[in-house]
Image (cartoon, rainbow, N blue to C red; front, side, top):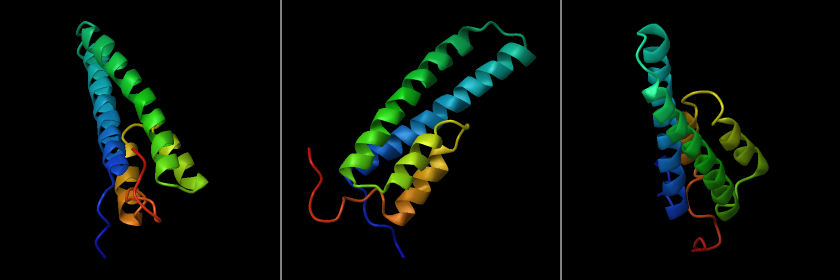
Length: 112
């Protein structure tokens, strides 16, 4: 069964999930370069800040998406916990998309 089309809020959440994971990858690669290849820590400094900012943005976006799309409590909890281990936000976003949690909430259009 095809998943319903994404709402605007669902699209914002999907982009945030991808960027959160991407900055995690950047930070992990930067840490590998620093500690295994002995490069300067400029990349850790950069990706640490990028990931920290995206991590916080993802949390805010998850709360907004949960409220606007009327997620059950378990879905919001899963979305928030997904940001802790590396790269889990992407599979959670894909799962939410399949379950229809990123489509507009039933009963009308989403608020602006």
